[in-house]
Image 1 (cartoon, rainbow, N blue to C red):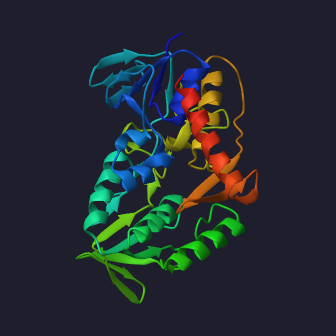
Image 2: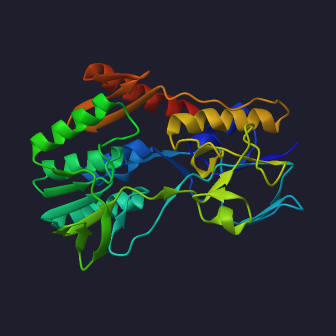
Length: 320
C-alpha cells in the first residue's frame, strides 16, 4: 500500500516516523516555528532550519481524488491513502507584514532595524515575544489585542505575567481593542490612531487556501475531518496538524500536530484510533526569561526553559 504525506511539518514528520511513506514538501528543510523570533533577532535563518531526512521536494498543484493522484510540479504521484498535513497560512492584510515563515522573519528584522515605532496586532505567543524583542531594541512598541488578556489560550497566570513583564519594559499594551482599519501606515483602533513605521500581524492563522480549492469541506480554510482524522469528503484521505480540524475544533499547536500525525498514519494503515490530544507545555519567552504552562500549571525560570528545550529535542527526534 502506498501512502503519500503532503507537508513535512510536525504532523507530516510524525506520520512519516510512524510508517515509511512518500513525503512531499515544497521545501527541503523543516521549520522550527518557535525559533522564528530568534531569526528576527539574529538574522540567521539556519537557527530555525533543519534539513529533512527524506522528502520529495515539489509543490502540490492539485489532487485528483477519483483517480487517487497528487499532481505536483515534479509530476503525478499515485496513492492508496493520502495524509494532508500542509500546515497553516496567514491572512494577508495590505500594508501589514505577516509573521508566518522564515522569509517573513527576515523581512520583520529589516523593518525593525529601520523603525522607530512598531505596532503588533495580536497578543499570542508570537506577538508577545516580538513586542519584547522590539522593546529590547529600543523601539516604541504598541501591542494590540482584541481580547481581555494576552495569551488568551493559556492560563490566567501566564496572561497576567506576560502583561506585567511587557508593561514593565515599556510596551504599550492595548487590550479589548479591535482594529478597524489600516491605511497609510496608521492603525485605526476604535478611538485611537497609531502610526507605525512597522506594522506586524500575528493573527489570522488559517489553513492553506488550496484545500477549499480542491473542493474539500473546510472551516477557516482547514479541512474538516471526523474523530478518526478521516476527511468527511474522501474516505482514503486523512488530515493532520494545523490544516485540519473537527467540527468541535482542534487547536493549532506543534504538540497536537505530532499527536495527530501519528494517529492519522495509524488509521491510514488499518487501525481505528479515535483522535484525542493533550497540551503538555506551552512556553513563551520575554527577554531571557521563559514562562508558561506545564501540565496545566504556571511555571517560570529554569523549569520553563527545560520544558521549551525538551520540545525542541522532540522535534529534532522526528527528523532522525
